[in-house]
Image 1: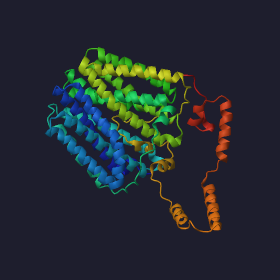
Image 2: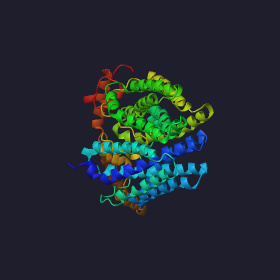
Image 3: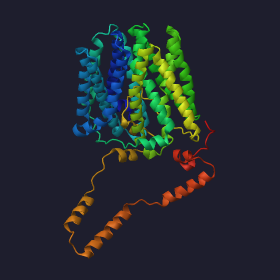
Image 4: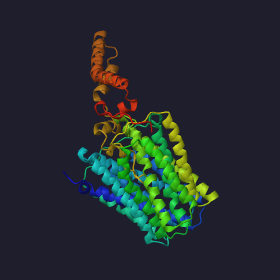
Length: 499
């Protein structure tokens, strides 16, 4: 068995440089705007523009990759992002900076889509879990390195922007010289937002409000720490401690979510998170205490998304998970756009501490909404393989679901690969037009042939009827509807107590 780290060394190297540059640029802009005494609303708008670019890039990226290929699309996106980063050094106009942030988000989403689609097709089914985990670990490591890099340039001059541009230029090299075969073009996953919100309202509500918290942290925490009087090195430590806590919490939180009701775990998470954020908002700054509180915040704040993803996946069938992933990422992007705008406005009106005051309000609202929704639903049946590692700064695209080892690769390819045109059907349509005046005997024969063909194409429903009868008997025995959809009948577990 080949080693994924060696097989995908070029893709992982490119990911490391890309995410490192993106994280460094985000922290630098937050600190730079704070040093320029810019109103907080502008800082929030900068981060919202970035997430808006990510959402838009999920649509544009598919078309670009389909038209020019993966390497050309990646190189073009990296060039646009590098130029946009350097544009901050040439122009001081804040309106222009917002446009540049939008372009950075759009270009980086295209880069993520190239990397993930490449990994999706080249990874063996037996190694998809290792490939996905390695990809996320490299992404988290890059985020941490990006935060640490800002401490090398405490004066916040042009050097960080030059380093960002260098990383975006170098990230093209490994993917440009790789000898691996290009993946096949993919099309956007089917998106039916209303359907998934009806099936998993608790999960998507958690994603929506949790993304407001995460987006506000990434966009405004550097400015918050700077306004406390921290030097850039201390700000880097503050950010690194929070992100590292989120990385370290993924595995234990995943194991815990397999042992208890996820909806209950999310509500407990919300209550504890509300206490932590309230403490950060009200307590005076103390180096050690603040560092401990933000570390605990990272543990809880960065695990809301994977917990919600796990809960959502337990509510849908396997064939729906690709579309669910696209819905989750869209919800995350929209929430991350709105959160920094609201938080920055509150910070401008009521002071620096309102960043965590806003997060406290978000967690309490989320708890209340989840409590209400849960009272209308039955408890979900726990599953041991639905927890997915958090993506940090949305370092993921709608194609990330295809890397999920829980998914059947055939169903993924069926949903995300363009349907080929059937030449037989085209010929049949043409013949029907040309022979419209043929005699009735030939027409009847053609109709019979078409009827036979349609009958042959229809799936055999006998097995489905048997499954439905077994499902009905199983429900009559006391099982919940969620248990029959989350797992096969042979392995279904009895529902836990109402969370």
